[in-house]
Image 1: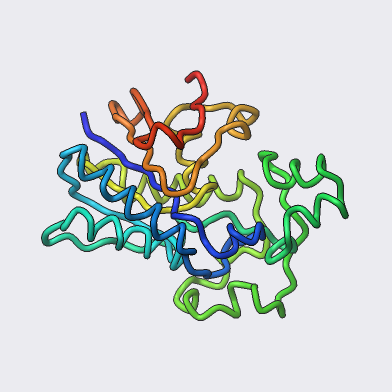
Image 2: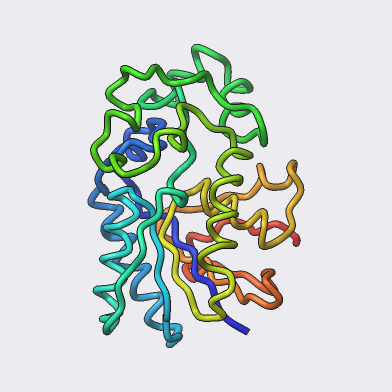
Length: 235
Protein backbone atom coordinates (compact mmCIF):
# COMPACT_ATOMS: atom_id res chain seq x y z
CA UNK A 1 0.00 0.00 0.00
CA UNK A 2 1.26 3.48 -0.84
CA UNK A 3 -0.21 6.96 -0.57
CA UNK A 4 -0.76 9.59 -3.22
CA UNK A 5 -1.47 13.18 -2.15
CA UNK A 6 -3.03 15.41 -4.82
CA UNK A 7 -3.09 19.16 -4.19
CA UNK A 8 -4.70 21.69 -6.44
CA UNK A 9 -2.69 24.91 -6.15
CA UNK A 10 -3.92 27.62 -3.80
CA UNK A 11 -6.14 30.38 -5.16
CA UNK A 12 -4.41 32.27 -7.98
CA UNK A 13 -4.84 35.91 -8.95
CA UNK A 14 -6.98 34.85 -11.92
CA UNK A 15 -9.04 32.52 -9.72
CA UNK A 16 -9.73 35.60 -7.63
CA UNK A 17 -10.73 37.55 -10.74
CA UNK A 18 -12.84 34.60 -11.98
CA UNK A 19 -10.93 34.30 -15.27
CA UNK A 20 -10.16 31.26 -17.40
CA UNK A 21 -6.47 30.61 -16.79
CA UNK A 22 -5.31 27.34 -18.31
CA UNK A 23 -1.67 27.46 -19.44
CA UNK A 24 -1.16 31.16 -18.60
CA UNK A 25 1.39 31.59 -15.80
CA UNK A 26 -0.11 33.64 -12.96
CA UNK A 27 0.87 34.08 -9.33
CA UNK A 28 -0.90 32.93 -6.19
CA UNK A 29 -3.13 35.41 -4.41
CA UNK A 30 -2.54 36.16 -0.73
CA UNK A 31 -5.36 33.75 0.09
CA UNK A 32 -3.71 31.17 -2.17
CA UNK A 33 -0.47 31.44 -0.21
CA UNK A 34 -2.40 30.96 3.02
CA UNK A 35 -4.15 27.90 1.57
CA UNK A 36 -0.79 26.43 0.57
CA UNK A 37 0.65 26.95 4.07
CA UNK A 38 -2.40 25.30 5.61
CA UNK A 39 -2.09 22.42 3.14
CA UNK A 40 1.51 21.98 4.22
CA UNK A 41 0.55 21.78 7.87
CA UNK A 42 -2.24 19.28 7.13
CA UNK A 43 0.21 17.07 5.27
CA UNK A 44 2.71 17.40 8.12
CA UNK A 45 0.07 16.15 10.56
CA UNK A 46 -0.27 12.93 8.55
CA UNK A 47 3.24 11.88 9.53
CA UNK A 48 3.68 10.18 6.15
CA UNK A 49 7.14 10.08 4.60
CA UNK A 50 6.95 11.63 1.14
CA UNK A 51 9.41 10.03 -1.25
CA UNK A 52 8.71 11.59 -4.66
CA UNK A 53 7.24 14.96 -5.65
CA UNK A 54 5.85 16.22 -8.95
CA UNK A 55 4.35 19.48 -10.19
CA UNK A 56 3.50 21.31 -13.41
CA UNK A 57 5.36 24.09 -15.24
CA UNK A 58 3.09 26.74 -13.75
CA UNK A 59 4.09 29.15 -10.98
CA UNK A 60 0.89 28.76 -9.01
CA UNK A 61 1.44 25.01 -8.62
CA UNK A 62 5.19 25.34 -8.03
CA UNK A 63 4.82 28.01 -5.33
CA UNK A 64 2.06 26.00 -3.65
CA UNK A 65 4.45 23.06 -3.59
CA UNK A 66 7.35 25.14 -2.27
CA UNK A 67 5.22 26.41 0.61
CA UNK A 68 4.06 22.86 1.39
CA UNK A 69 7.67 21.68 1.37
CA UNK A 70 8.71 24.54 3.64
CA UNK A 71 6.05 23.62 6.20
CA UNK A 72 7.25 20.01 6.13
CA UNK A 73 10.98 20.71 5.99
CA UNK A 74 11.47 17.88 3.51
CA UNK A 75 15.09 16.78 3.56
CA UNK A 76 17.10 15.93 0.45
CA UNK A 77 14.03 16.02 -1.77
CA UNK A 78 13.84 17.76 -5.10
CA UNK A 79 10.77 17.84 -7.32
CA UNK A 80 10.07 17.06 -10.95
CA UNK A 81 8.33 19.63 -13.16
CA UNK A 82 6.25 18.25 -16.03
CA UNK A 83 4.23 20.25 -18.55
CA UNK A 84 2.01 17.18 -18.87
CA UNK A 85 0.60 18.02 -15.41
CA UNK A 86 -0.46 21.51 -16.52
CA UNK A 87 -4.01 22.75 -16.24
CA UNK A 88 -6.35 22.16 -19.15
CA UNK A 89 -5.87 24.68 -21.98
CA UNK A 90 -9.03 26.78 -22.32
CA UNK A 91 -8.42 27.91 -25.87
CA UNK A 92 -10.16 31.13 -26.91
CA UNK A 93 -11.71 31.44 -23.44
CA UNK A 94 -8.27 32.06 -21.92
CA UNK A 95 -8.15 35.31 -19.95
CA UNK A 96 -11.90 35.93 -20.17
CA UNK A 97 -14.18 36.43 -17.16
CA UNK A 98 -16.41 33.41 -16.53
CA UNK A 99 -19.47 35.40 -15.47
CA UNK A 100 -19.22 37.70 -18.49
CA UNK A 101 -19.01 34.66 -20.77
CA UNK A 102 -22.14 33.20 -19.15
CA UNK A 103 -23.99 36.37 -20.10
CA UNK A 104 -22.60 36.27 -23.62
CA UNK A 105 -22.88 32.54 -24.38
CA UNK A 106 -25.41 31.36 -21.74
CA UNK A 107 -24.72 29.60 -18.48
CA UNK A 108 -25.48 26.22 -20.06
CA UNK A 109 -22.94 26.72 -22.85
CA UNK A 110 -20.18 27.81 -20.48
CA UNK A 111 -20.92 24.82 -18.23
CA UNK A 112 -20.66 22.56 -21.27
CA UNK A 113 -17.33 24.08 -22.31
CA UNK A 114 -15.96 23.78 -18.78
CA UNK A 115 -17.22 20.34 -17.81
CA UNK A 116 -18.02 18.25 -20.87
CA UNK A 117 -15.70 15.34 -21.53
CA UNK A 118 -14.79 15.90 -25.16
CA UNK A 119 -15.95 19.36 -26.29
CA UNK A 120 -13.08 21.87 -26.35
CA UNK A 121 -13.54 25.64 -26.66
CA UNK A 122 -12.56 27.37 -29.89
CA UNK A 123 -8.82 27.49 -30.54
CA UNK A 124 -6.69 30.32 -29.16
CA UNK A 125 -5.10 32.48 -31.84
CA UNK A 126 -1.39 31.73 -32.29
CA UNK A 127 -0.61 35.44 -31.96
CA UNK A 128 -2.30 35.83 -28.58
CA UNK A 129 -0.02 36.81 -25.71
CA UNK A 130 -1.67 33.97 -23.82
CA UNK A 131 -0.70 31.29 -26.35
CA UNK A 132 1.91 28.89 -24.89
CA UNK A 133 4.16 29.50 -27.91
CA UNK A 134 4.49 33.08 -26.67
CA UNK A 135 5.16 32.19 -23.01
CA UNK A 136 8.81 31.66 -22.11
CA UNK A 137 8.35 28.74 -19.69
CA UNK A 138 7.31 26.50 -22.61
CA UNK A 139 10.38 27.08 -24.77
CA UNK A 140 11.63 23.52 -24.21
CA UNK A 141 8.26 21.83 -24.87
CA UNK A 142 8.07 20.27 -28.35
CA UNK A 143 5.99 22.51 -30.58
CA UNK A 144 3.82 19.64 -31.73
CA UNK A 145 2.85 18.93 -28.12
CA UNK A 146 1.66 22.47 -27.34
CA UNK A 147 -2.14 22.80 -27.54
CA UNK A 148 -4.20 25.78 -28.61
CA UNK A 149 -7.30 24.36 -26.92
CA UNK A 150 -8.21 21.22 -24.96
CA UNK A 151 -11.20 19.25 -23.77
CA UNK A 152 -11.00 17.30 -20.53
CA UNK A 153 -10.43 14.22 -22.70
CA UNK A 154 -7.38 15.91 -24.27
CA UNK A 155 -6.07 16.75 -20.80
CA UNK A 156 -6.59 13.15 -19.70
CA UNK A 157 -4.65 11.92 -22.73
CA UNK A 158 -1.50 13.79 -21.67
CA UNK A 159 -1.80 13.54 -17.87
CA UNK A 160 -2.50 9.82 -17.54
CA UNK A 161 0.23 8.56 -19.92
CA UNK A 162 2.73 10.69 -17.99
CA UNK A 163 1.46 9.22 -14.73
CA UNK A 164 1.79 5.71 -16.13
CA UNK A 165 5.34 6.34 -17.41
CA UNK A 166 6.83 8.32 -14.56
CA UNK A 167 4.81 7.93 -11.37
CA UNK A 168 2.62 4.86 -10.92
CA UNK A 169 5.29 2.16 -10.65
CA UNK A 170 7.34 3.90 -7.97
CA UNK A 171 5.41 2.19 -5.13
CA UNK A 172 6.22 5.15 -2.91
CA UNK A 173 4.37 7.88 -1.05
CA UNK A 174 4.00 10.60 -3.68
CA UNK A 175 2.91 14.24 -3.64
CA UNK A 176 1.60 16.00 -6.74
CA UNK A 177 0.89 19.74 -6.81
CA UNK A 178 -1.15 20.45 -9.92
CA UNK A 179 -4.46 21.85 -11.14
CA UNK A 180 -8.19 21.28 -11.05
CA UNK A 181 -8.42 19.50 -14.39
CA UNK A 182 -5.13 17.61 -14.32
CA UNK A 183 -6.15 16.25 -10.90
CA UNK A 184 -9.66 15.55 -12.22
CA UNK A 185 -8.08 13.54 -15.07
CA UNK A 186 -5.99 11.53 -12.62
CA UNK A 187 -9.03 10.84 -10.45
CA UNK A 188 -10.95 9.57 -13.48
CA UNK A 189 -8.17 7.04 -14.02
CA UNK A 190 -7.62 6.11 -10.37
CA UNK A 191 -11.34 5.70 -9.57
CA UNK A 192 -12.48 4.38 -12.96
CA UNK A 193 -15.00 7.21 -13.27
CA UNK A 194 -17.33 7.39 -16.25
CA UNK A 195 -17.21 10.28 -18.71
CA UNK A 196 -20.41 11.65 -17.14
CA UNK A 197 -19.35 11.30 -13.50
CA UNK A 198 -16.00 12.98 -13.93
CA UNK A 199 -17.79 16.25 -14.73
CA UNK A 200 -19.34 16.18 -11.25
CA UNK A 201 -16.05 15.90 -9.36
CA UNK A 202 -15.07 19.17 -7.67
CA UNK A 203 -11.43 19.87 -6.79
CA UNK A 204 -11.07 22.71 -4.21
CA UNK A 205 -7.97 24.92 -4.16
CA UNK A 206 -5.30 24.21 -1.59
CA UNK A 207 -7.00 21.22 0.02
CA UNK A 208 -4.90 18.03 -0.14
CA UNK A 209 -6.68 14.89 -1.32
CA UNK A 210 -5.17 11.82 0.32
CA UNK A 211 -5.51 8.59 -1.65
CA UNK A 212 -4.56 5.10 -0.59
CA UNK A 213 -3.32 3.28 -3.67
CA UNK A 214 -3.54 -0.49 -4.11
CA UNK A 215 -2.97 -2.32 -7.40
CA UNK A 216 -2.69 1.04 -9.12
CA UNK A 217 -6.18 2.16 -8.14
CA UNK A 218 -7.53 4.32 -5.32
CA UNK A 219 -8.78 2.21 -2.42
CA UNK A 220 -9.91 5.23 -0.39
CA UNK A 221 -9.84 9.01 -0.53
CA UNK A 222 -10.43 11.97 1.77
CA UNK A 223 -9.76 15.68 1.82
CA UNK A 224 -7.52 16.70 4.71
CA UNK A 225 -9.33 19.99 5.39
CA UNK A 226 -12.78 18.63 6.22
CA UNK A 227 -14.27 22.11 6.60
CA UNK A 228 -13.42 22.95 2.96
CA UNK A 229 -13.96 19.49 1.49
CA UNK A 230 -16.04 19.03 -1.62
CA UNK A 231 -18.29 15.99 -1.67
CA UNK A 232 -16.49 13.06 -3.17
CA UNK A 233 -18.53 10.93 -5.50
CA UNK A 234 -19.65 7.45 -4.50
CA UNK A 235 -16.90 5.42 -6.12
